[in-house]
Length: 118
Image (cartoon, rainbow, N blue to C red; front, side, top):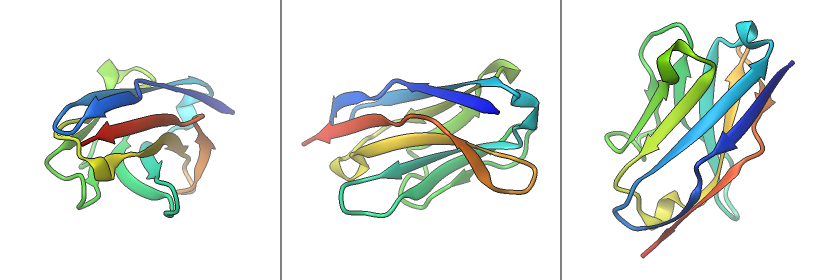
């Protein structure tokens, strides 16, 4: 199994920045990619960014392109999501999740609340 612990959420004014971290432990050799999802009240969960653990082009949803950056911290087992130019539409609970070799997101973090005020 892989355990994921997220940190870094909070309250920020529109235009501000936050950085989320997701520390993985356990069988981290099973990780092929880390995805960042978010779910706002009354909305479906959406994938906002994904990074392949061993390199390759990251994925960003259109709504966050140019504002969010996904990374893996120094080849460690920690994923990062840098969020800049935040707006109220970015308010949601953010989750990290790891993709295994079969392409499924199996393991999930506990979620962290991001609230952007106008």
